[in-house]
Length: 316
Length: 276
Picture: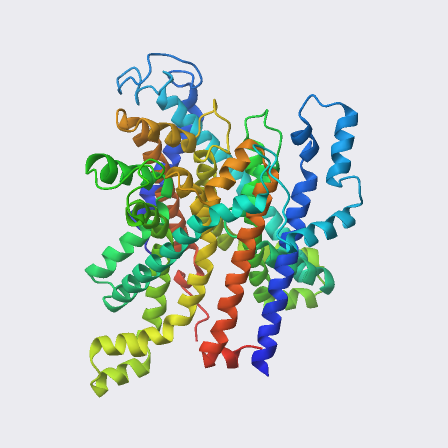
């Protein structure tokens, strides 16, 4: 019963967040000075033309009518058309670009979880010794170096000097996926894995100092078995939460990485749409990104109490 | 209480950076003028060489520092003010207002990381100016919710402490308690928190500039200097090195100072007299 109530409150929270996101993106479209009618009719358009375009877009209606329409259309995955080029439906643009971002995000989450958890556990076990200091140095480095500083350095080393990897995805399309994904994914995972390392380390240190760990060691359980079975299992829940939160950072990370490596994903598309003033595309990408973020956090929030009885009882 | 040497290194660097930002842009050559042939190597005349158009890199780096520091500080002041104000509303205003403020703050977290800033910049149309104002607005509006959360939790923990309750019993008004007792208590924590936030702001600002959607082109910024530098990094690696170096050092220095300040100001590191 308590579990049901906890899940309901999480669902309510997610619903409020999504409502807020929809309001903000809706407002972003209407606030924009000049707005759609100028972009579509051109700068030299007469008053009458602009009035006609406004009517065509339904902008002469009251704001709440427009909001309801916006939501209805969004539910049918109709986000309007791009202002530029062949005026492609925005949904098609997003659909075309999302697989690349999803792939980058998937591998980056996987890689940074593996690195973060492994290094964090090692650092906690060898607390204040050389391994720990090296790992802490890595994590400081990882959280402070911006990806767009690291990316040119690594491309210079691996692509230009060692000639191991392709520089431009569009040019070297015939190579297997691994070659053009390895560098972007590694750079994207550096920051998240460094933060995860830090948190895992402090969580593991807390757990490893507890009585039952010492008891397990005294009982004669092998050392690494104690660390993984007794230690990590007790520290894993906040780590999972953080992995769920990681997606958000990776989404904005993809803006830089996709633009740099010219990978056709929604991050690159968003930056280009900002540059050419293509509001519908940007708004839709924001909407999609925020929705993915809210839903993934919701899933983690619901999974946690199901997986961990302690949280289940502590909550509500 | 031990202050690490990293703190002093960071502090000295930051003081140097501020001097650099104040005097550098017109120290030897004006930052916006073409003063020599493009891609000159570093020399006594041009300390960091010249860029692809023949402008003095040293002066442009200094101007970039000025922009970064100004934007960083302005964003920090604005987001801190909004954040503290919202937190005070959430804790001390009418219950319904407080609830609304907190739900609003929570909802702001639905936008991951920089997404909200990207949205604001994309919607902003005044493309004739140098692009500084959109960056400041976008970053301030996306930075305040985390401050509100922090300040709110601090205010709630302070609200029931004895000295606040005692002041209230003496008949002090809410405004007096907040301004004279609660906020002074929080200043050390807010200070360290805003230095760490400053790191985030400077990184975000450089990200926007790197992507070419922040400060507009003829004006220099570290981000767009990195973007220009990477395009001919094989023939002129130093063009890329300088902005990367100064940006990374600034971030490192700020984190060192932030960590050091936290160690100095953290009450857990102070001698406590009332320990039982």
